[in-house]
Image 1 (tube, rainbow, N blue to C red):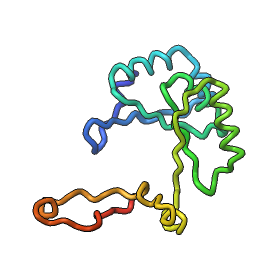
Image 2 (spheres, rainbow, N blue to C red; image 1 turned 30 degrees about the vertical axis):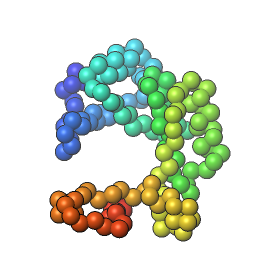
Image 3 (tube, rainbow, N blue to C red; image 1 turned 135 degrees about the vertical axis):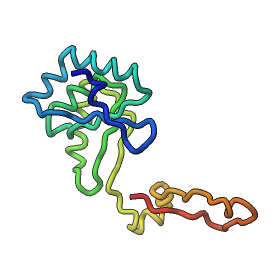
Image 4 (cartoon, rainbow, N blue to C red; image 1 turned 90 degrees about the vertical axis):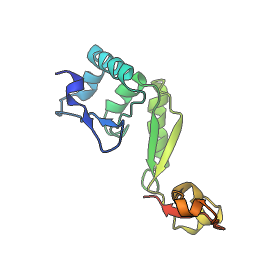
Length: 150
């Protein structure tokens, strides 16, 4: 089956999804094959940005087999859940395979904790509301409206 036949449009313009398909035995072995390299080259030639959601690094070999084949890996850590020891071990596995990890994403951040407001970090977790037409003309607010991101 051609990979283009399984691409699914989303409700966002210019955003498409390729579902994972059937579960395979030994997926990391499949990821090491030349067919994966060919697929990635074709997809890279067709789209500007490719985001691949993979399993946790320590849960399976999939991520460490695939990560060296892609441009960059953003490492996601769940706050107050993922231990520093497991995070370090996972990053070491990626670094040992010469994986480019340009950043770490911290998710499940509780912005209601007082330390986020004390250090003024809350602004990083809130999204400004779109400027409405009547607000933009002749009306200025002393504080911007903010919407809590989820």
